[in-house]
Image (cartoon, rainbow over all chains, first blue to last red; front, side):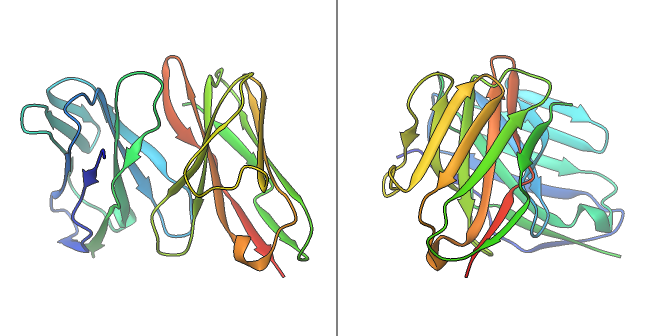
Amino acid sequence: QKEVEQNSGPLSVPEGAIASLNCTYSDRGSQSFFWYRQYSGKSPELIMFIYSNGDKEDGRFTAQLNKASQYVSLLIRDSQPSDSATYLCAVKGMGNTPLVFGKGTRLSVIA
Amino acid sequence: GAVVSQHPSWVICKSGTSVKIECRSLDFQATTMFWYRQFPKQSLMLMATSNEGSKATYEQGVEKDKFLINHASLTLSTLTVTSAHPEDSSFYICSARGSDQPQHFGDGTRLSIL
């Protein structure tokens, strides 16, 4: 069974610090990797996706992928209280398959 | 960015009523659409996957006769909750993916059955 594991948190960081969110996956054939942000009572919002090993940066967000270690992470620089949310890691295999989601990590940025 | 529109955002109705939820991809062709359900403080639960023009594939434990899914075009999928009961009250979220678009979510529909 394909699994995506995340620490449930809560992860608390002070405002302005770097928040580091981690995710591991079990399926070595996974092709695409996604990070979604979900505020309480709202639907998930796509914030980053990465397909190749290495880093991908978009504003304050950096996604990192290491396929050999089956590990993907999301760094949030200069964290703001508005970043407080649950962050969902999702992984997609080959073909037209559904995303496999982790249970999410709750991030709390303290002002 | 890609937009997925879901309607209605909130439904309150009596037990036994059937409720239809629409999901539209506004600026891309959604070759595949997904329907999820989420209970408070719990994880997303995939209910079914639908490809345009094909019958939906339901996840184990999801009753296909209760949750009717139609994906008649590349921009529209509907979920009908038939004869809804209080235990069907939940947050229903659609999601769409295109051939060159990652998966985006609609805003969700909060369904309350009295």
